[in-house]
Length: 317
Ligand code: PIR
Ligand code: CA
Image (cartoon, rainbow, N blue to C red; front, side, top):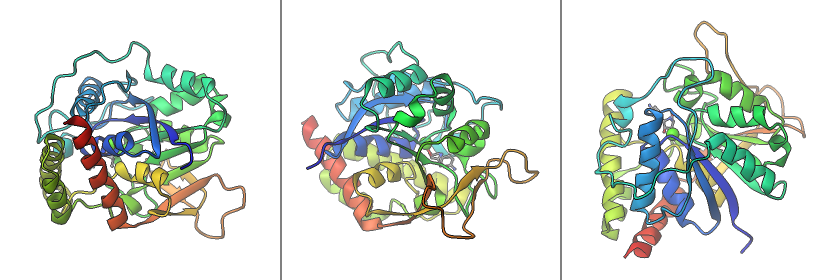
């Protein structure tokens, strides 16, 4: 097998961020170098602690957690308690971390890791607002040509979830998103068009229940809360596990189909702030740096997630 893909996961856990973490920790195709956190689904303190609790559940507190930006670059803090609850991970009991987060700021960790690694080896995966990634690019512009790829869960070319056209992660910090989409690095947008196909169905839950482990129960508790929230607030039958799709794409690109298309982030529209605008009018130029995720292999995706929970459950016992 080829060398594992080295990633930094910049996240705001978050029910679906937690599943992204599980996939990244368990799958041998991925080497998780560190977790960086950003205020988003809940306040920075809460979601940083959540990241640590998920590591405890996975028996992987060796992975460093670096806290990052508590607020967006320009706008006021906006959180999503209706969807993720007061803790940011409602529906389960969160184990106490046994160690504090790292001293180094998330942005510093991102820069130091990219500058120390061979160029073109480390991938940045962002599943929260893009504040940390934007700050890193501004503070050390040389990371832009050193990163292998930036994979963003955010936006959508046809759908919004926080406004009719804006997705939450982009809406929370559109200026940061604008910076990140505008930089000269290759960027894959795993937006709502794709992630709304990643529903955690009753069948998936039954497969996880069969694993019969504390981590399996943890996943089920998370999904039950997330399902109720999505039924009540978004009219979905089952919850979409957005963030895990970024990791699945890196593990096996045949699970997530993509299409090259130029993207930009709207900052000034009356009804469209935070919209990700995709220009599908003509075939993308050969040097187009952007691509969007279009179609998910649902069964293939959930096989990866269920297998990840199984692997982590057995490592634990
Ligand atoms: C999910 C999120 C925020 C709001 C809603 N309604 C649903 C979080 C998820 O963690 C994901 O990263 C992204 N933001 C989806 O919009
Ligand atoms: Ca998230």
